[in-house]
Amino acid sequence: MTTTEELILQVLQGLPVQVKRDRRIFISVPRNDLIKTVNILSNELNVQHLSTITARDAGSELEILYHFLLNGVVVTIRTTCPKDDPTIDTIVNIFPGAVLYERELNDILGIVPKGHPDLRRLVLPDDWVGGNPLRKDWKPPQESEE
Amino acid sequence: MRGVKLPIGPQHPALKEPENFTITLDGERVVDVDIRIGYTHRGIEKLMESRTYTQNLYLVERICGICSYAHVVNFTQNVEEVLGIQIPKRAEYIRTLFLELERLHSHFLWLVWQVMRSDLIHYLCIRGRTEKSSKISLK
Image 1 (cartoon, rainbow over the protein chains, first blue to last red):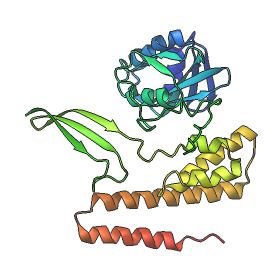
Image 2: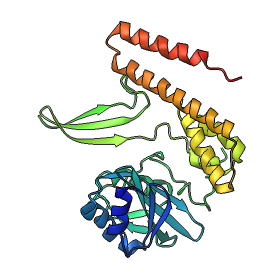
Image 3: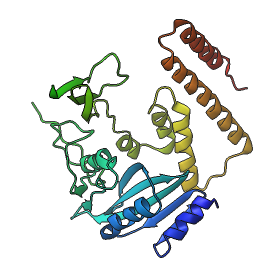
Image 4: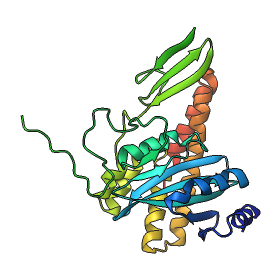
C-alpha cells in the first residue's frame, strides 16, 4: 500500500470505504451525502482531477460512479438514485469539468443533475425523442410506416 | 470586438473527427467555448448489450482505429475478472508484447503529428512506424 492510499484511507475514516485491489478505492454513499464526500476529496485530499463519471441501470435503481484520480490512485464514489426520482446534486460547482459528463448522464440515462447550468443534449441528436437508450427497459423507437 | 462567436466544425480540415466548437472571443482572448460532439456517436455500450462476449471482441477492437489492442485487452481483462478466468503465462506475454508494440506505434504517430511541418522527419517517422508494423508476426 502506497503512502497516498494510506493518506486517503486515513482521511476517509468513518465513511463506508472498500479497497478492491491496489490503487483502487471505492466509497459508497447515499445521494444526499454526495456533495459532502466530494468536498472532503476536494478540500482535505486536494484531489484536482475528475477522471470521468459513469452510470448504469442496476435494475431497481440507477447507480452513478464518480472516478477521481490522486497520485495514481483511483478513488470512486458510488451513489444511487431511484428510477422514479432520478435526480442527483450536481458537482459542477466543485469540479467544473463535470459539465460534459453530467450532460451525458442526463442524455443517455435520464439522470437529472440538480443545479447544472446547461442541460442540453450531448451525444444524442437534437431532435431525439426516443427516451434514454441505456435504461434496461428502453425499446428502440418504432419506425413510422409511410 | 467583444463577444464575437467563431464556429469551427463540424467539418474542418484541422479536425480528425466531426465536432463543433463555438469559440467566444473578446478581442484575441478566448473567453468561452461551446463544444458539440456526438456527430459520430455509435452507441457502443448499447450495441454490446445484445452481443455475446466473443462477438463483443470484434466490436471493441473498432472503438478506435489506431489503438485497437488496448481496448480489447481492457475488455477481455474485465470479462476474465467477472468470470474468474485464469489465463496462461504465454497469453500474458503475448498481450504485454503487443501492448508495448502498440505503445511504440502510437508514440510514432504522435511524433508524426508533431512534426507535420518538417517533411523529412515526418517521412522518417512514418517509415519507422510502417516498417515496425509490417515486421510483426507471431509464430
